[in-house]
Amino acid sequence: MSAFTWPIRIYWEDTDAGGLVYHANFVAYLERGRTEWLRAQGLDQSSIRETTRLAFVVRDMHLDFHAPGRLDDELLVSVTVKETRSASILFSQDIVRGETLLVHAEVRVAMVNLDTMHPAKIPAGLFPS
Image 1: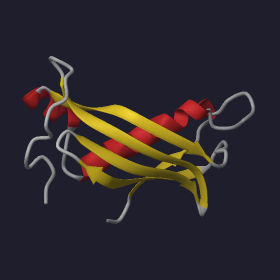
Image 2: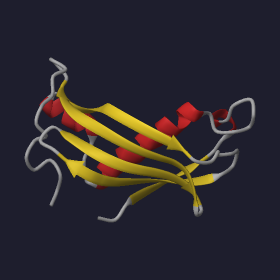
Image 3: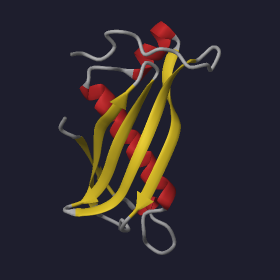
């Protein structure tokens, strides 16, 4: 399966006192990548939430930082589905600047019922074939 990619530009507010991307911002970039991946699948998280009372939440995340990001960098966030289960999806994600890997992440999102916050099966047919 080929990776979905989404561009990110580093702005002043993304950096810390040392002029590097603040580490927590990488988590936000990963989230943006997964959100745009869902949109590319034709899925709108707001509509899913409103019609089914279901939503994806991060269950587990492992981050490996390789290199820093800096002001004005143009980055690509990639999203690849590594595994699907009845109530969760495991993503492999990378943030790169050109050929340089900055961050690698493994992220498991779980589908939950928003009223109970218990796991729920991902509805059949949610993702187009």
